[in-house]
Each structure stands twice: as structure tokens, then as C-alpha cells.
Length: 366
Ligand SMILES: Nc1nc2c(ncn2[C@@H]2O[C@H](COP(=O)(O)OP(=O)(O)OP(=O)(O)O)[C@@H](O)[C@H]2O)c(=O)[nH]1
Image (cartoon, rainbow, N blue to C red):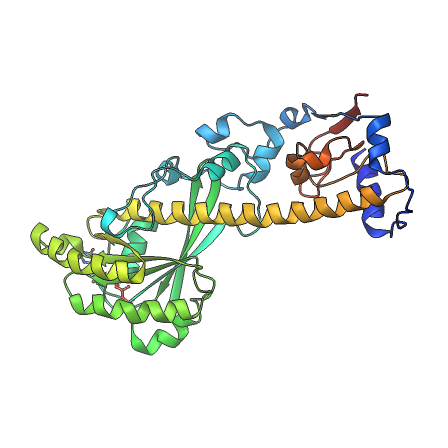
């Protein structure tokens, strides 16, 4: 049935429809003669089929069944426990943070619970770490990704990157973390990798306030390669373990001031002791994830609205409106809109549900 609907939809979309005659019996007649109610039955096939990979149990995943869930799960081992983010990680200081919310956006929560996140452009965010040489960029990344600390300095040549997997609100998500060289002679190589960053981390050494000043230039260079307003910016003071509490607080006052100027979120960390490192990257991941989901929802909602408008216009003009119309799965969410009342039709099939992964049937009730 799905194939038949798909074929019909192709013909409905591709072939020109006759223009409406002035006295054409349009959908209002259809409305009078037959109010069609449609019931969708999405069959138990959803839950009956075995999943490809058993996901890690999490709150959001627990209520979901079978095929749809598994199609969103990555292949490979489950993410480690400390990469599972169920609630929104907190800021370091409210004096310089990107947002004060303690929960995921309502729409993001709802989308994740339905497992209705898209797949394109959502599963991975690019993070670029910049700053002077020797401030501790590589050490910060290695502490987080490998849980190691090397006291010997080895300069980064050009760039390097790590991919770190998370599960956020039940959805698999990864950060691609780019470590760039701080040495001037490698700057032109590194800057070629700034493009497409969703997050820019500007690092400085808390024991060397000159490196804080230089973060302005690093940020400017990184932003130049990206769309205005498209990146989250973090300012990170490293080597916290080398300062007394009072000295750290003093350095932070200056750093927070600059962070506000840069519209950045501020964090103090130590790669040596690991202090704040996980919390920091969890915050980065959660903010990037939330933004990706919201952007994806926006993209998709404009796509389905466009599609629905097109279908609706054609139906209004059609001499002999079809009994069934195939529209995208996302259009289902528009069914309760006033546009739909009295339409004798409906729907359902969308390309990104795997063919055969669920049975969908439509029952006109009267
Ligand atoms: N005590 C202490 N030392 C640190 C910390 N982070 C980094 N270091 C040391 O600082 C030095 C420089 O660290 P790197 O991570 O290599 O610095 P980098 O910013 O990546 O340097 P480039 O690759 O040249 O840009 C190394 O000797 C590290 O061991 C820290 O949190 N505490």
C-alpha cells in the first residue's frame, strides 16, 4: 500500500493538474456530501520488529519501541555513562554564561521524547579550540577525551581532532573537537579549519594574563570564517590548579569582563586535576545539541508547511479530488489545522521512514 501511495503521490506532484473551472465542484461539496474522518493505524509492526542495536536505557528511550528507535541509534558500542546527559548542565558562573535555563527547551524535550529529531546536520557539531601556544588546549582536549594528562609540552602542528560521543535527552550526538596550533607559524594551516564551527572555544592560561588579551584576536580570526551569529563562544581559563583560590578569583574578574564583551560563556578548568573539564564539555555539548534540534525543527516545519500548502492548493482546484492524498509524515502534525476540516482524504507516507518499517493504513470512517 505504501508503494501505491508513493506512486500516486509522485503522479499527483509531478503531473500538471487541470485548472479549476468556475463552477467546479470543489471540496466544499465534498465536505457536504461526505465528511471524511480519517483514522491512522500505525501498526504494531513498529514494535514487533527487532532493533538493529539495543540502545542504552535512558529515560527518553524507555518509552519507545522497536524500529523507529533503533534507526536513530548509532552502530557501535553504547556511549559511556558519563557521556549521558539527561538534564541541562549548569553554567560555571551566572556572571558570564550563554543561558541561565536549567532545562532543555520545551520543544526540544518533546521532540526528543518522540525521537523525532531529524538526521541531517543534527548528529554532530564542530567545536574549534583556539588560543596562544602553551595555554593548554591539547591538554584540555586530551583530559576530556582520553582522561590523560601529559606534563611534557609537545607543540601541535597544524590541527588535530577528536570525536566524542554523547547521548543527550536520549538522542545520540557527537562533538568533533578540533585542536589547533597556537604557534604563529602554523596559524595559516589551523585557520583553514575554522569554517563550519558551531562552537568556538578560546583558551588562555590563568597564570599568564597576556594570553587572555590575545583571545580577542583568536576569536576574531575564528569568527571571520563563520556566519555571523552562528557560533557559541566560550572563554576558558586553563591551569586552575596552579593558582591559589584568591589569585584565581582575581583573574576570573578580568576574564568574566572580557567574556561579556565577547558574548562568551566563561569557565575555569584544570586539565591536570580534571577540575570542571567534564562539566564544561557537557555544557558545550548540551548547548550545541539544543541549538541543532531547534534549527532542525525550524527547517522541517517550513518544509512541511510548504508541502502542505502545495497539496492543499491542488486539492482545492481539482475537479475530482482524490480519495487519498499522500503527504509527508510531518504533515500529519498539521491534520488538526482548520485547513483540514472536511477534506476527504488523507495521507501518509514519507520518504524518511524506512519502507516496510511500519504499516500505515487509512480508514475513512464515514
Ligand atoms: N599544571 C598544569 N599544567 C598544564 C595544564 N594544562 C596544560 N598544562 C601544561 O602546559 C603545557 C602546554 O600544554 P599544551 O596542552 O600542549 O598546550 P597547547 O595550547 O596545546 O599548545 P600548542 O599546541 O603549542 O598550541 C604542557 O606542558 C602541559 O603539561 C593544567 O591544567 N595544569
